[in-house]
Image 1 (cartoon, helix red, strand yellow):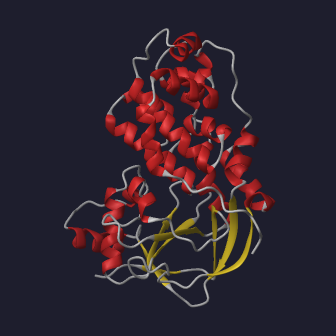
Image 2 (cartoon, rainbow over the protein chains, first blue to last red):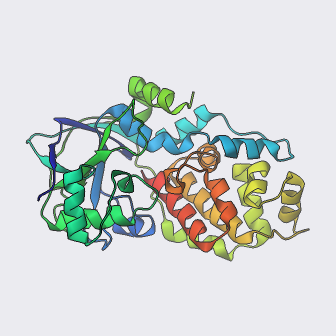
Image 3 (cartoon, rainbow over the protein chains, first blue to last red):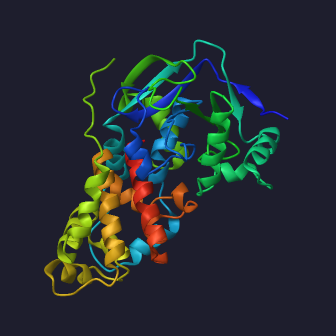
Length: 216
Length: 127
């Protein structure tokens, strides 16, 4: 049995530091803080993008969403200083970032890693059993990274999965596209930037994301 | 392409320098960025008076390792965003900690969770 494949849409979205949406993170940075589908052997790198612009914002801003228990514990501390407004936190986060729309000029397929068929293949490749869809969305990245490596070694272009930040009523996919070869700097899927704007200027998608996350 | 200046690179190796700082310097820098209350939470005390004592050298924090890791995380976030973002990040739902807040995750007080904290901060800053 092979992986379940799914076609990349014609457009994907990315909110990133700087103004080059194709730039891959340096290996030294990945070594200190590997992403969910980064190579466990630190050879190839991964380009992350989302199905919608709002989804790309959600991926970046999700960790600012207030945790109720933490806020309660904060309020219980005896003292008189206050938190900065959330609006300022959003501006600080997005000011050095761009929001990019990337065109996918050729029909390219990615592995749908959450699909049962793909999970069965991953189990075979890694010699494990009982892999669940949620294992690729949890806080442990170990299995996800090993699966990424197996899929990379099988010559696939990348993989896709629903965002760990999305809920049932607001589901969007995230795309992880592999670097062509170690240190190549190019990807196994050709992406062409169609527009690159200051992240604070894409107001509609930003409003949708901050509303979804409850940041306003 | 629009002319957004390239943000400063995140120097992850510079974060290790935090381990060389004295307790008072660690507490002072954290408090100046995150505020006294959040620093108190990280240091696992219930009032900001204790933080002021750490800052003046009048008392020693019992959770120094947590404070050091928190300062490393804070410096990483400052490089990629800013102080208000750092405050909110410590109190936010974080997928690296099963959607628990980083400041609450620190209560486990293990080297593993401290490493995870710094990794999660770098991940946020470099997204």
